[in-house]
Length: 133
Image (cartoon, rainbow, N blue to C red; front, side, top):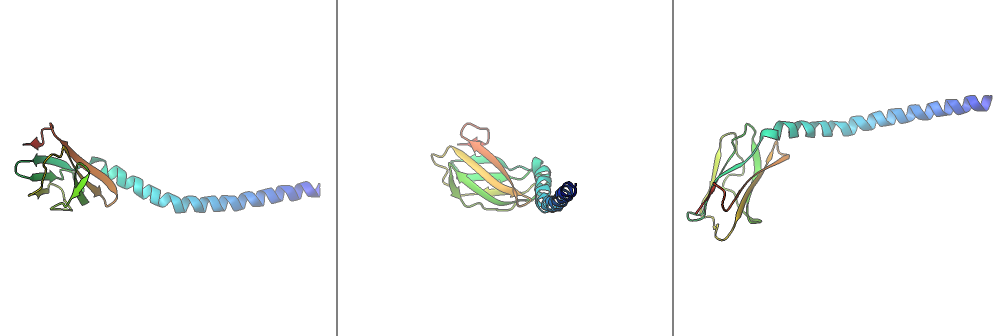
């Protein structure tokens, strides 16, 4: 009878210790996950738009029509990175890259980060309305 009581007390003590440990673990790991999920939700409407790729003029025009600030903007031509004239775009701002050798490239991608964390991009390929010759 004493052994059964000690076994039950030991089981309850281990359960209490695990409960405290798990609640602390959830509190530590739940914070960043919740914050990241909030940023992703807020950035769901964020986007970059390529308004024009003009191979003749060597010009790429890109814009941020969304209500969120987009930073760390990078431009790639068929995977090769070119420097962006503006690496940060606020709402409604436009970036214009000139003297770009578009040449035989077929796809331009403009990528950036909303809220400094959530990736957004705009893409234009040969044949799209944004591609001018």
